[in-house]
Image (cartoon, rainbow over all chains, first blue to last red; front, side):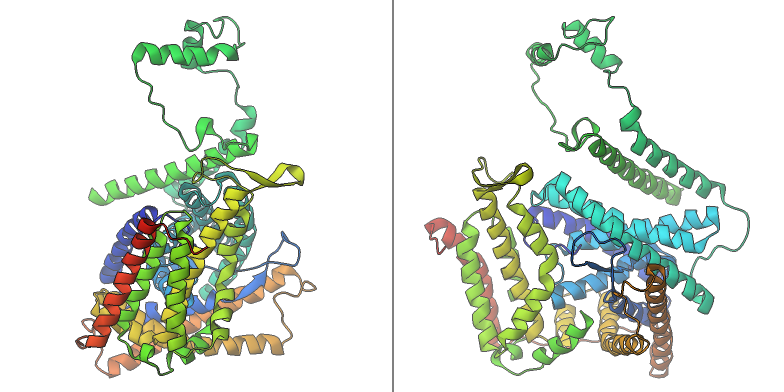
Length: 333
Length: 275
């Protein structure tokens, strides 16, 4: 998932760098505020440890490509869970990615901003904020760490495919399918290894795991988050197969008004739809038309699975926005 | 990758005119080449600029007296992800060409387009030149020199301090990694052995990762204690002495920056095509 140089136009690479720098600055603020003098050498040595961990390869659980493909752990979820903050993951992964980019050529210099966003920011945030509520609700660290590890790899891979599609260097549909499938499988390694590693660390050195919730009542808020996400994902997966194909009220009125559809029937005269749109443009004088990246809640050429992916993508984006805004407002208050 | 660390440093510890240059000059020079290469639009202009940049980087590699085998090995190590995207380009249309011409028809309605092949080669040239610049930079600059150079150029002290310590312990973990691998081999454990249950293999790797994590944490605690003994405190910062650039270093820096600007502009203006 380390995007090399040359796969983004320079303007987009600069934009990703700006976003990454904001998160790096936030992680530095976290480091200044949260890192006691003791934690400075600790985080530095942990970053070296995470780098070593990333070199431990193992075969994929399902053979996708003949001849075998291996995968390794990224470690964002692991670092965020153990150190008790997604900013810890951003800080450590930024160090690791700089080292990999500058010394090993693994991931580009101009593309490093995007790589930090994908693996550090998204990996850390999704890993941490998946682990916490799942662990609170189900009281099962192993299961929570597995899901957190899987999500922390899968979501960045999907975002990586979208970034490359926006850059025009990888078709969206092909990118989502290949990156999604490959990282859904490789995520099993990330999830499994994170779960076993967390399990070992908690048994061997429980004192080093930050933010471990003491045994007690389940948090209603966490339950709500897990239930909400589960329902939203369930709807995203099943909605395209059960949703009505008829136009909604506004569309129906518009089509009826221009003779493309009878008010009392469901039949649409496709030949008159284009002329109805042309008539509106002529009347209003406004020919602006926004070319949406996912038109009609779908991915071009993918039929129903494309609609599922498009809705999943929307759910994730709205979750990030909603969660980010609520955190921001809560902190202000 | 961690095994690679040892021979990268071995290459960086050689002595040559290029190795002796200040790290700042080398960092800025190589970054300028990379940024210039990335900034060129996706067009056949990339071929000429790419060849000229590659010739410059190859000349520096030769001047540094580095073996070409090291370059080839390191290039192969970083190829997979970029190569995957490049290879699949030939089967798809993209937004950078208005018209596409089919040059081969494959089963299942798959086509190979002439323009897509050209686009794939453009991506490949950009990718190879940028990776070559990084391989060169890391092969002619020691890790600590690079950190000092970055510190002198304004890397935040929190990062400089942490990054310095990270570099210091990378080699420790390189050896730990070797030992762990040896002990796993001694116990006849192979993570790629499909005869072993997958859950068991994952558990072993998970515990190994957890062990490395705990070992790195405990190493961090020991480092902290020993640093306290040497007067470390929360206000400690990495000290980097000022170092003015020599005339030859200024000249090299100016040459690199001029090259990064003039080569693409001149190629665009004159329309010279080397390929």
